Image (cartoon, rainbow, N blue to C red; front, side, top):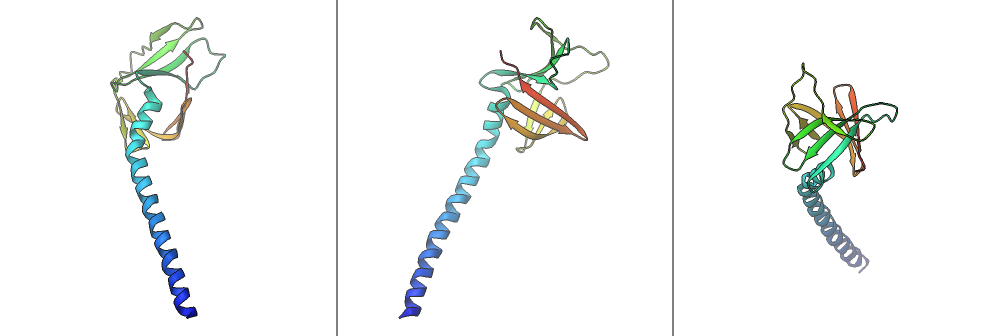
Length: 139
């Protein structure tokens, strides 16, 4: 009798755990499918977003990355008055496209950066030993 009760309890526990495991697996699959879309939303919003690069308020010119929903990006400079101009450096030509690879790599003009941290106002990228901190520009 006690053995039968134990088996019934064990069976119920196993059923509930198998349901829980199934739900967790389904949630993880759904999350991984939505993650790229969510990551795109964080990076460029509905249309576009402007991010400061390694922001320092003491600098006269602020370098910015501009990400567009059509997967184009630009490097811009912002002066103290808030005017934006395209960053021109004649010895560097960057292709102006960006691509997400997996859920942790962004390719900017052919250079792959590891996404270390991302939230609505901060994006931290790593390439080799270099860390790039992007802060959302309040427009």
